Amino acid sequence: MRYFVVFFITLLSLSANCQTKVSGTIVSDITMLPISDASVININKVKGTTTDIKGNFTIEASVNDTLHISFIGYQPLKVRVTNDWIKNATATRIPLTEKAKVLDEIFINKYNLTGYLQIDAKLAPVQDKNYRYNIAGLPYGYEGGNNSPNAFNRIVSSAFNPADLLHNVFGKKPTEMRRLREMKKDDAVRNALANKFDRETLSALLGVTKDDIAEILERCNYSEEFIKTANDLQIMDAISGCYEEYKAVHH
Image 1: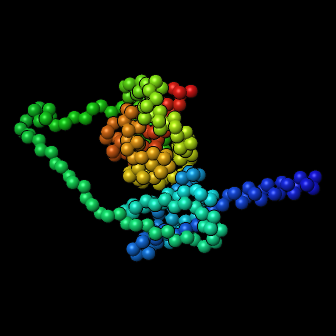
Image 2: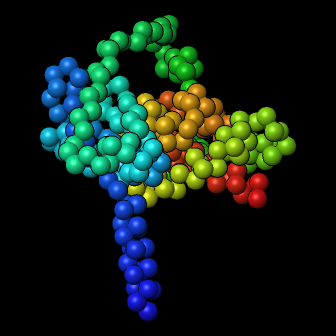
Image 3: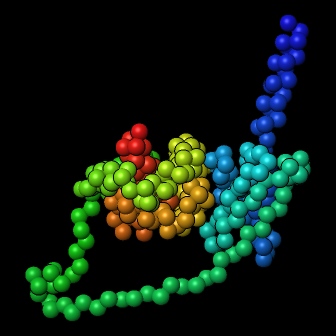
C-alpha cells in the first residue's frame, strides 16, 4: 500500500510538471513600450491569451511548442518555446516590428448613367444570389457550402480525385484539421480570430497558406465576397463546416 501511495504521488508530480507555463512581455521594437491586447496563441495546444496593459502574458506551453504572436499594425511573430524559457522565472521580452504602411492602389469604375431608373438599374452590377447559413457564435448567417447548389457534389467529387485540394489538405493534415474543434472551444482563440482579417493566425494554426484557405472556400462553394470580407473566425467556421462534410463522405 505504501508503495502504491508513493507511486501515485509521483504520477501527480509528473502530471503537474507537464502543465508548464511561460511568461513574456510584448513590446514595440522601436519604442520598447509595452503592447497591450496583443494576441498570443499556442499553436500546438490551441490555447490563447492576450497581453495586459503592461504587455505581459502567461500561457500554458511545453518545450518546442510554437507561440504565434500578433497585433494590428505589427508583423506577426512565431516564437519557439525552449527549456531555458520554461525554467526562467522572469518574463521574456519579445519585440514586435511595425508593418510598413503601404496603401493599395484603388480603381474606381465609371458607369455611364442616363438618369432613367429603369435603364440605369440594368447598367449597375448585380451580384449573384448568396445562400446563407448560421455560423456558430455569430448573431447572423453567411452563405455556405451546406445550402448552396452542387456543394455536396463538389465534396463527393474529391473522393474520386486524389489530386483535389480538399483531399490534399483535409486528408493529409488530419492533426491540423482536428485543431478546428479545439479552436472553437477556446474563447481567447475565438476572440482573437474575430478581430482579424489577415488570415495570418488561421494559416499558422491550420498549417496551410492564405492561398490554400481561399481555394478551400472556393471549392466549398463560398462566394468571392465572403472569402474577401469575412473575419478569421467566420472563415474558421466555414472551413470547419466544409471539413465535417468531407469527413462524412470519406468515412
